[in-house]
Length: 203
Image (cartoon, rainbow, N blue to C red; front, side, top):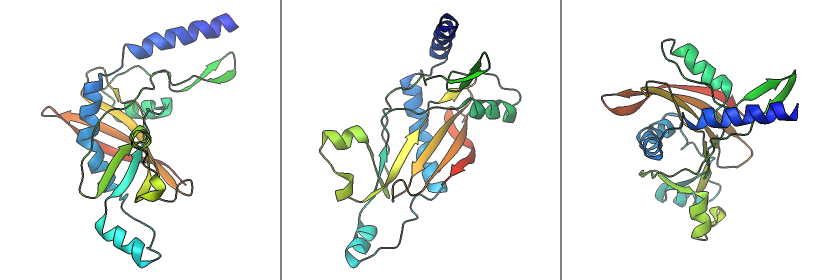
């Protein structure tokens, strides 16, 4: 039994790696579409300021959104949903999923998880990776912190013209509220654009 599971994990590892996109493509996609997503789901909705000092910060400072350093899991259900939506597209479902072996449900570790690297510049938001805060000894509690952003691996179809990733957001009052979405992207005239944005969870 142990040998069977080990063999399956090895197969999954190699099947995932051959479908990975380059870090440059990932950077290009996130820098092309993330600001549009953030504006469309209104991350700027804030709790009412409870004193004049906070109100002044709201009016003058950029909101800090902290980005998790490493990618999260893109579920098999999300990948299958993509293939149902784009019936003419094809791609392999990777190991970021629940796998059934001998009637036992085993969660396979996200073998594609890796460190993110891109830069976003915006008038309303100040984006920082957690590692940047730590390196510069910045305490989110001492600045205008407004939530935490998590991103999954990007998965492209076999033609490299369509793809998807998931995004999660923990709001300004961390651990009290949050939401998730799956994002379908499409390449048009050499540029990556959002084709569909679907909510997946809310708390």
